[in-house]
Length: 601
Image (cartoon, rainbow, N blue to C red; front, side, top):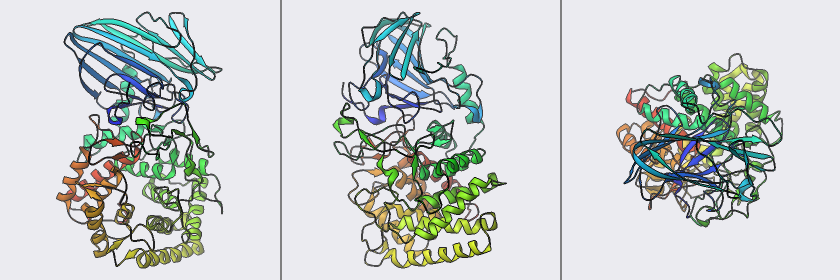
């Protein structure tokens, strides 16, 4: 089997892990223990990487959609013999509602087959491959179920149909009549731990509690602005990318999906970047979900620990692990033969000077929910402000995580200014009078240097790094975070030049030579245009970018503007964050409001 397109997949999530299921009913990715754990299905990265397929025989047409307010996916297959629906979900704990969903999920994948009309012949193929396809295992019958154990991982497949194993896989053919239902449940358990209770396939509606759990969260988070349904759907995706036991938000559900087909920029994004985490907090603030700010900042403080003069970590495992050294998985051929397949991400060792500013900005936006401020959070924010003051003159790897050399990236300097500016605004909630005065002096010096060295008169724009003549879309953050108004002549010239030289039909690349457009940058351009007073133009661009999502509203990291192919890890938190914040900016513009330092997200 050839690789499915990245955009063919839908996301299932349970607050601990994510599964990806394609339009043909094949689960092609799942790491059931947690987001960044070894996979049991990795067909997305290799035709022989493991899968669980459930589909009609022969040819069919597909219509699919999430059940309203959920990440439970219903796929309707239309065949010449009739119609059948397959409803897929990662189960939530019974009774969990609102912010409690996902914290104690049973780690079970439930698939419900329902006959709609006619008699439809179906086939199921179940073929687990453990630890990134490095290990096969025997399927063993056990009390009407099939159990398979490979080292620390045990999977148990149960169903309303008899299951017969052929050594290491199951092939099951059966018919579904109109009104008939069959249910299959695949549960994960640690081999040497306690197996959680999984939904009983004989239950009248084994996904009912999962649906109610997701809908309770959606009902608690209405968005009252333009594109309300779209914002809520994207907020659900961000919730699906959150490891609920700790509150960590992963950058994406996958590893090693390429930025360029056949290329080697294939990285593992199943970790929690502080940058992504803080942008997610801003997006959820917009989407009416600020109430867990304290818990989530507790995770940041716990994961980072005491900073002092040490380098600020930029990313973690979902429970706060720091050592994320890369390995290459030789057992997987890579999506569309794009090698290498990586597990771990060496960016954890980088210096990225924008991170303190991201954290302090998120804290400032959510300050009302951090009152009274716990001592560990106060200590962290004070340390990060001191780090920005001490390090802003240094080069770094930048937010695009360059692996060739450190540079004086403009966006990194701007976020150093943000860190100091927000610390000054916090005032005596963070530091004494001398500390606040020192932060203010450093803030003003950073700003002066940015305006003097960041502007390239020959190019007629702010460029990506000091002394560079290369445009970089990361400088679009300058008006978004309040460093410089979008209507400032220098900023406006930069916005227009980025649109002209890095844009392609309204979509924006990160830099000249970037092989594909980057969804977040395109949404940044929407925000900048809205802030510059061009609300109608911004709205048109928003519609263009939003329309590039797949049929379920999901975005990868990038898009090939020539072929329309989604590229990079999927679904990508950055992309969904960008949509939410752009929709908010358009809603603000439609009210006639202007930029406000106190109210800007």
